[in-house]
Amino acid sequence: MDPEVLKKAPLFAGLEDEAASALAAAMGTIKLNRGEVLFHEGDKEDRLYVVVSGKIKLGRSGSAGRENLLAILGPGQMFGELSLFDPGPRSSTATAVTACEIRTLEHDELMGWLSGRPEVALGLLGQLAARLRRANDVVADLVFSDVPGRVAKQLLELARRFGERREDGIHVHHDLTQEELAQLVGASRETVNKALADFAARGWIRLEPRSVTILDTVRVERRAR
Image 1 (spheres, rainbow, N blue to C red):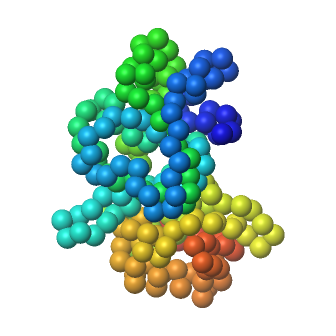
Image 2: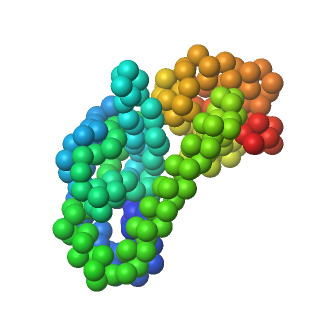
């Protein structure tokens, strides 16, 4: 486990090295293979999770059985914190997109840190505020943006978090299937594929298996507005 990756989590923001090491030592470890479920929507459990390696997707199922992806999380990102303050069933299903390692912190253990370390509480508050801001952005995008605009925005977000800059552009190995990418955008696979094909035909991107290379970032950014 890379301690520097773990320290990127909001939970560790502001902690000195000694305190960060003590908090890390209090955490458990879970390893998942691609496709394994960490928890299901409706499960009753109150642990907090931090991704150390790999990718996790958080999704919800609609009444018609269609899944909507809420987020794709990578190393250093945290999830599951809502149940710590609002006990109740899980509001989403967490599934491994790739093989991954997750660190966990039990509710009672975290409560002790919150009472004794205000910087931990501030880190969690920052995480909750960021989550609310993202939720507001998603609602605004669904109301005001068309599907190609939302596709462009998601490509840029994936590039920001998982992209690798190369000579020909930004290579983004997102590990998502076409269906998963469509669920993340909040549209049908056919509509999202049409937008991606249009971007590729214009020379803005190059499509590859479970990845994409953004060739013209400026054009994609304009389309995302």
